[in-house]
Length: 244
Image (cartoon, rainbow, N blue to C red; front, side):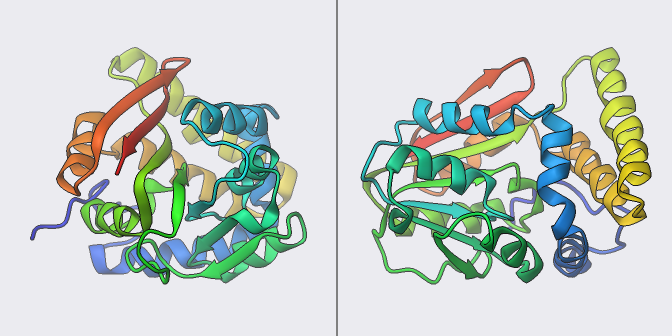
């Protein structure tokens, strides 16, 4: 089966598809101490509130068990914990040990080193799976979505949060100047670390070149999910929802 890739290889960062995983892991390992600050910088400090609201819109409830795939430092998982009320009901998984270590000091839920393509959990283990602004870093959306469906309980929900580049050329150009130029430059200056700016520039590059929403919805349906929909906030924050 041909992989459903979220974006083509990005020549400014790596040359071939097989180099993507190594590049992404090293990039996030190197910038992990600055990741939460970068997220807050991008969202003007409103990211935590938005994530909680998105999880509530997707139906997460107190007492439910959630798996946060590509959890990074756990920003989505921490928002989920405020809803479920129990750290033992939250599990985060990420291939970057640097990210996991940076997040461990901020929340005491379970953290697992691993990738979304091979989830080390039993079938039907979770009520909800979240992927927060990380879907673009996978090699094969179909493979990840099938694994997510496997570990979801019948009736379980999937929530994917992403920034979607606008269709309008003018809006895309404006966002490119801000996210691809101004934000990385300011972050580099404040952090005094070029790797932080490079990480944020890469963040925009993957947003700019990401497949359109219809491809993501088709991949969810192709993996066996039902009721796949997209909800949009502020014109560019996409919330993809689906049900097993």
